[in-house]
Length: 103
Picture 1: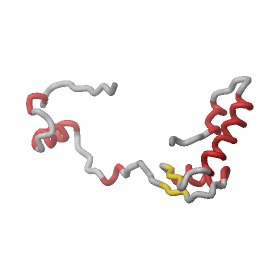
Picture 2 (picture 1 turned 180 degrees about the vertical axis):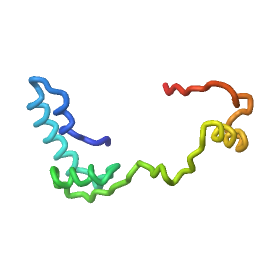
Picture 3 (picture 1 turned 30 degrees about the vertical axis):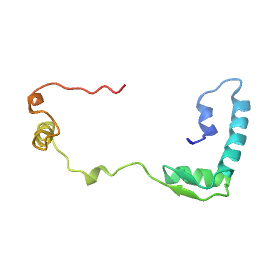
């Protein structure tokens, strides 16, 4: 299940915010106590869950970030040439303007 963060509701203030926040905290407490284990995507999220919800199941951290220094930096032209050489990019697009749209 995705993270439950009633603390994020503070950013969206309305007259119902206090009630929604209390309900969210209660739901989070119940949800964090019911699984066999909890997996978070950062150590700060795991620490926050431990601190504010004190769940009984173990919490594991599975970071999803990456270290940009572990990758070689290439200029745009060099990058296109490498992609063409590795046959991941068609050669006819060498001098074309490209953009990516995610739907």
